[in-house]
Length: 433
Image (cartoon, rainbow, N blue to C red; front, side, top):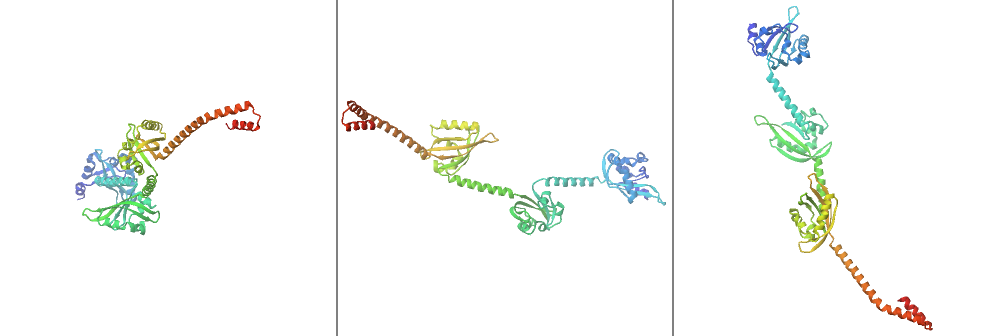
């Protein structure tokens, strides 16, 4: 019956070795699993079935030593068949002793469990990949069950609270977050456990860090029968970006307030390429009372503004623009623009230039209405011209009568009249003339 048992159990390799591991008996199951016929393997060392690396590290002898020490030696490892293929064995080595207690050999039992090992290794690989992915992304990830206990958190989530990942498993969300923080997210947790997918952004009052703005997504977890077993939370801390956005918005509002209330002027931002194409990115509201065109009209078509340049000033403006682009030097120019109402205004335009990585040139600057100054300068020039003309005319008109007066005074002095009054008068006339 024992022989029938050994010969008919084909799912297991059953064989006996001597105390040194030499094969003494061989079953049909051993032949089926390992590929050797009985006549090929009897008298051979059982090391033949171990991988070369296990043989080099002494695993066969270690297994026998373990069996002698504890009564069994675990044989769960990769083994080698006759054809060189490998399989994972779930096996055991048991020492065989006679009535006197002397060691007569070892009973070896092996079973091919490669399928289970492959599943385990695949599961291990998936888990390793999960950790590889989730622990390196700047996103907090938590997996919780329907009782609101943690099943898994990634490394960034645990680090956020200064804890190890293992400290979260099995703990209640409320206990780990604190009462105030949990109260903020509790309605969304309840919705997820009801089977709803929720996305929200909320300021959470953490006890250690203070208020933090978090963008969250909760996805329900369902089993094969559609029952809700928990949810997965993905969380991104957007506090810094929200603060930066708020600061940027406040800065833009201040800039817009200043630029829109600029008296008789406007601020602009212009993008130009090497082919001469221009596009306004921003023009403040001050352009409309100055020129009669709205910022939207100029943003839609840059030529609206460039077409207003007085024909006599266009060549000079173009030359200064080219020089500024060539040297990335400030553009500083005064020229005339036509308004929508048909009048002319003098503009003083000053811009800073910078080259972008795309090769385009960014112009950022301001233009101001200097018509009043130009008119005042013109009035001063006219007044100065009138003054020069008046003085020239006055000198001419005075020169004509003074010449005979001086000549008469000189004649009186030559004649030498004895009256002292005439002498004094003559001296006075010469001096005053």
